[in-house]
Structures are given as structure tokens and as C-alpha cells.
Amino acid sequence: MIQRSGGQGGMPKLLQAVMDSLHHPDLRRKLLFTFGILVVFRLAAHIPLPGVDVGALRETLDAIPALAMLDLFAGGAMRNLSIVAVGIFPYITASIIMQLMVPVIPRLQMLSREGEGGRNKLKQYTLWLTVPMAMLSGYGQLVLFSRPMAAGVPAAISVGLYGELLLPTISMVLSLTAGTMLLVWLGERITESGIGNGISIIIFGGIVAGMPEQIGRTYVVAELWGVMMLLLMLGALALLIVFVTEGHRRIPVQYSKSTFRGGRVYRQSGGTHIPLRVNSAGMIPVIFAFAVIMFPATIATWFANPPGVDPNFANWIIDNFTAGGDFWWAYYSFLFLLVLGFTFFYTIITFEQQNIPETLQKQGAFIPGIRPGRSTAEYVNGVLMRITWGGAIFLGFVAITPVIGQWMAGVPLHEPVMIIGGVGLLIVVGVVLDTMRQMEAQLLMRHYEGFIK
Image (cartoon, rainbow, N blue to C red):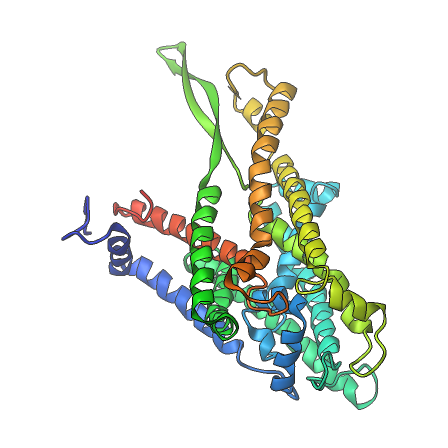
């Protein structure tokens, strides 16, 4: 086994760490396996459902910016209406629902405290919930694309629950559901045999695959200087994401332990800390907020009158309360407030599940100057709420970066060139950091220097 204490010949540490990973057979196998799964995912994203007018489909997507978030999690597969067009979003939604139900339902709360067996049972429930949600999402997409949504754009597909359209519709819904479950299965294979969190890696692959198209669309609308301004803003945003994601508050913890020597009891004391992250909620609040704010426009598309017919209230919602509508300022203000609210809500839910004060008390640990029990819980909650303000404002800023980026690039708001650029970058950076940590752990186990110093 090769060991080293520094770079060779001035080679950057990151590049050297990558070379070390490729030299070790086990790590090389994990990296190649992860890459192979991503290749399978991208191949599946190009297998379209039968009977789809791809040209009309893409024009429909360009006409409805509200579908950009769904296309993000589908990795661009929605533009071909492939078998994985629904993407991993139903599984993410099911996971969020299960996390919110655990503190509410006593049976689920008991399972969450039963160790590995209980977590596996909750995971099984999540998979069961994913199936009906994928079926509903798949049928909703088919119904949406079966309507002409813009002037001169025909319907992309024909569906129905009656007559000769019944069996084709059922087969397409089942195909889309099977595609979602395939992505979930591929993600689990990455988690078990590859590097990183599988579901996050699948989302990461979809976002990265769609970046060239976004950059090209921006170049067409904003020309070269607009692309440069947009890339400059995204670079600065990436640094900010890393800074906030890695930021945490350390709460000192003291503990005492007893050892027996020669029939006598000796007490020894030690110290550690509880790291409370500034952004402990991750990207979940942003996803929640986008799902809520897009819901009215998405539902309105089902009831809007087609082009050439007098518009109704549903058409008004689509034309006004969207990212590129007349009330774009209200849209982004409401989105910012939603992110703030969901950040605090999700942080409180996850923190209560961890039950840190009770765990400290059981281990005989305490925070210096704070009495165990209720006082400890109040102190930790107070610190968590104060630092969460920083994480909440940061996530709210990330959510509204599309309007800031398009303003800097001189792109009109109705052009969907950067609908979810900040959210996508947040996911990409988060996945990269998490994968780097796992690579770091693997390398340190084998006595190499890792990525992070």
C-alpha cells in the first residue's frame, strides 16, 4: 500500500487525492460503479414514451416555466417525455411526508427509535408511498401535455380514461411509475456499492446534464456578456453555498466517565462539542417552497382555456402569478417568505427527532453552566433558532437568484433561462461536498491524504 504525506512534484492535493482513489482497487471499483449507474440513468432519459410529439412537448415546456422544477428533478427527461420523465420527485415527496408524519404518529415514532430495523421499516413505507404518488404524478403530466398550452402549439400526446385511449394511457402511467422506481433502485445501488448518497447523485447527474442547454439558451437570449455575468454570479454563489453549508456553531459538552482500577473507582472528565449547522435543513425548504408556489399555476393549466378561446381565471393565474408574469415581484416575495417558514419548520422537526438533550442526559454529559434536562433543551433550541435565521435568509436568497441572475444578464423575466439556477447549484454543491466527505473517509481509512484539509 502506497502512503504519502504530501503532494508529489507540486501536484495539487485535490488532483493527487483523485489519483490515489483511482490507484486503490476498491475505491476505483466504487467510482466506476457510480459512473456506470449514471450512464444507465442518462440512457433511460432518452427512451421516450410512444406517441409523443417531441417538438410540441418542448414548446409546451418553454411556455410553462412552472414545469422547470419538475424537469430539474427529471434530469431533462421531461423534454423527451421518457420513461423516467417523472423523475425522483415522487420519492422525495414521499420521504418528506414520512419525515413530517414520524413526530405526529406514535407508531412511526416508535419505529424511528428501534434502530436499524425500524429505519428499514420506515424506508419500506416510503417506497410504498412512492408508488401511488408516482402514478398520480405520471397521469398529471400526461393530462397536462395532452392540452395545447400555447398559441400554435398542438397537444404533445393524447390520453384519456375512456374508449380506445384507456389502455394506452394505463400503459404510459405504469411505464412512468416503473421509471421512477427504477431511479430509486439505481440510487440505492449507488448508496450500497458506490460513492455518495444515491438519490442525490441521480439528481446531481440530471442537473449537470441540463447545464449545457441552459448556458446555450442564455447565450441565445443574452449573448456573450450576459453568459459571462451569469457565470460570474453562479461562481460567487457557489462560494457562498460552500461557506454557509460548512458553517456551524459548536456547543461545548463535558462528560465524566468512571473506570475501575484495583477495586477503586476513578472519575475522569473529557470534553467534546455539538455542531449545530447554520443550514441544518439542507435543500428541503427550497423544494417545499417551490412545490407550494408552483401548485396554483400547475393546477390552473388543467383548467385554462386553450389559445383562441376567451381566457378565464386559470389563464389569469398562469399569465400573472408565475416567475415571468406581471406580478413577478409578488411571486418571488412569497417564495422568499415560504422558504423562511419552511426552514424553521423543518429544522424544528428534525431537531426534535434527534432529541439531543435526552441523549446527553443518558450519557452523563452536560453543557457547562447549563442544568441538564429542560434548561439544556431551552438553551440548545435558543442557539439553534438564532443561527437558523442565517440559514433561512441564505436559502431564501438562493431561491430568488433566478430573478437576480436574469436582471444581471439583461434577460427578460419571461425567458425561462435560469428558472432554478440557484436551487440546482445548491444541490450540486451539496452533493459534491457530501461525496468529498465520503471520499475523504475512505482515503483516511487507507492512510492517504484526502480532499479536505
